[in-house]
Amino acid sequence: MQIEIDVYHLANSRLPDKLSKITASNKSWKFNFYDYDALEKSDKKGRIVILEEEDSYISCVDVFDAIVTKYSIYPTVIIFTVNRELYNVVRWMRRGAADCLWMGDLSDQLLKNSFKSALNYIESKMDIKAGRDERKKDNLYEEDKIELPQNYDWDSLKDGENYEMTLLSISAVMNKDAVGIYSKATVEKIYEQIRVEISAAAAPFGGKIWFWNNNGGMLIFHFGDNANLAALFSLYFANRFFLLTYEKLKLDKPLNYKMSIDSGKGLYHKTDTGHITSELLNFTVHIQHKLTSDNEICITERVYSKLSGRIRKYFAESEKFQDALIYKY
Amino acid sequence: MGISRLKRLLTEALSQAFTVDRLQLFGREIIKNLDLHELTGFPPNCSIPRKDAANELVEYLFEINKTIQLIHLIINTSQNGFKSEKYEFQNLKLIINEMKECGYEYNQNLNKIVKIEKNEKRNDWGFLEEGKVYNFCFVSVDICGNSKLVRKYDGAKIKESYKIFKSLVVKSVESRNGRIWSWEGDGGLLVFHLDDFVDSAVLASIDIMTSLIVFNSTMNLLGEDIIIRMGINVGGAEYKKEVDSIISDSIELAKKIEKNHTTPQTVSISKNSYQHVNSALRNYFREKEINGMTIYQLSFPIKEEVCK
Image 1 (cartoon, one colour):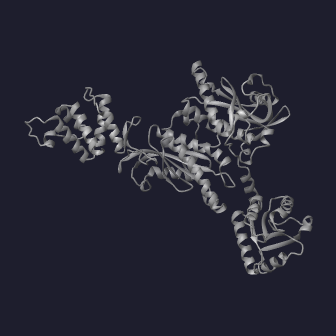
Image 2 (image 1 turned 180 degrees about the vertical axis):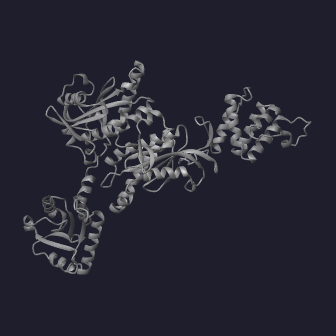
Image 3 (image 1 turned 90 degrees about the horizontal axis):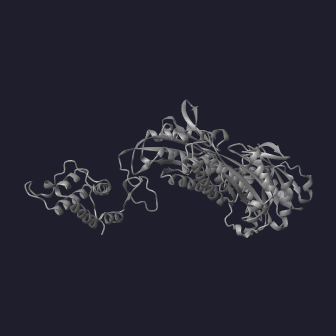
């Protein structure tokens, strides 16, 4: 199988000659040469792109960006450089290059060996034969990593101000079979324990219980990637819910949960939560009351659109509510 | 200090609490045909001084490695009496402290004297004996497609991701008094023995599966989710200090269930083991016939219909 490689070189460069020489006897590579001025003329067919650096990352990064964005699928890029600075290489790798080759005054044989070694390295990273989008998929997955917030201080938020936030409305619902089994006092104790457990479980995700009433309440996430953190918390908690009811609460009849999440700007107040009226808050509550069944999580399109690929797969499009698309787990 | 002080304290405790006749009866709880006259060398028609009888008994039990049994018997006697009579051992606290100096402690929940676990959890929970057969619940856990992942991703990233994954397994297992008897990078054998050990194994497995969602979203350094399978089976095995050398059909069955009868992101439990699981937990599992074997499975993420 022949691998097509698009080569973007400087005007009057010796790179095309060198590459043609080193690959003369090797028919498994096919080079398409374009100089910087002919970016638009490129067919963008190559799975691999070679970019000849002008003299450093700084002077060439715009060309790199212009090239990769033209490809419908993110290509694997090898940078050919004469710059010996280590940090220059680091910057290319961080930008998304797959490898960097120093070409300086290397002999044809050494250049050929370096090039071969670069291709071997790349092949070990991506399955060229299986599909050219493999590398892109991996890159996207890596970029989609959700960071748990390390340091956050709720006291830094001012009362009466509007902030970007994600709200999560949660309710614990007694199973039909369990109604009547437990006394009122026991049920109240169970709900209180659930509140304590939710509070502890939400903290590593940067969330806190904003207010709580009997069997449910509102969690607020503001710090870091709050939409992803709220959604991840909901998945985590949903899957652990029966561990909680069985192991911690020692209940024979499991409880059910309902969760709904929305994201946007909303009014914040530390304590006077009873008087807060915000569209965001109302919408989150409405979704839970009107659309969410037992053991379901509903999220709005605003949340879904911000989700990392790592957790988006858990949610499926469901229905429209007041012109907004709702996704469910 | 240490052994000699412990012996002295035990001698004091026994000689203060028991007459020689009662001491002989007490000692027979450990050695059935104990004869204190024979042990001390006093002729049968002579009475033995209490202190000598107690001292010889303590020395003898030490020689035949039964000191721990003696201390355990003293603790039980102080709590429940002996032959319907109450006994008080005034220096019991000192005995327990001295025992700690010698590397043992009394575990009230287990009602056993166990070896003290310092930095690492002991594979024998501090009290299993070499060569004896015990009941365990075994959980085989494995990362699916490990060889493919190893070929595809950078070694350092694999190593780091697997290390973090193992740390979450350790947390889930040890918080439920389980142990990891073997680990080979991409999986291993988890073992539960104490309390409701089958339930503990099931709960730890669920905990690991749910923690994996957070691990994959926040800590996994690879370009795709790490997916695992788990197989659970209860059964006997002869304990050996070198846990790797333990050969048991029950362990093999746990591994077989995990490898051949379990789909990715699923916990499977053998039919026999399922009967030992608490009914509230059983409701979450579904009976399946896979490759000619009836097993019970719970897949993750948990779907809504499972919870109903």
